[in-house]
Every structure is written in C-alpha cells, then in structure tokens.
Length: 74
Image (cartoon, rainbow, N blue to C red; front, side, top):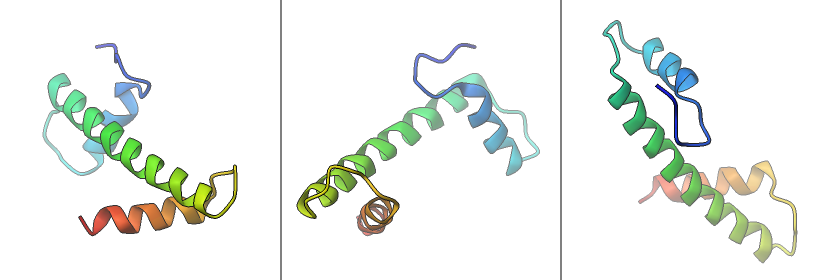
C-alpha cells in the first residue's frame, strides 16, 4: 500500500513490528502514521514559536525537546 503522506508506511510498519508479534494491517499503519504526523506538526509548530521567541531563525534540538516536554504535559 502506498502512503499519501510524506512518511512511507514501511518504516512505520517496521517500528510497530518491533513491539508486537502480531501481523499489522495496512489500516493500522495508516492510523499510526496519521497520529505521528499530527504530533510532529504540533511539536514542530511549538518549537518554531520557541525559536522565534529566542530571536533565532534556526530550529534547534533544544527547541524540539522543550516543545516535546510541553506537549507531554497536555
């Protein structure tokens, strides 16, 4: 099955299979891919705001880490 997202399904499926011995449906992979993209978008947007508030035009790992820590709280 081909992904309509920027993330190919094969790596996502491999990640899922690392944690289960069950077979994984294409629909399950698609749902997890959608969730990964949704979370990555929210964290990236917040990290971008953090970098801009710091007067930078470059997103750094510390911005992502801080944004992720804030995301986990909600």
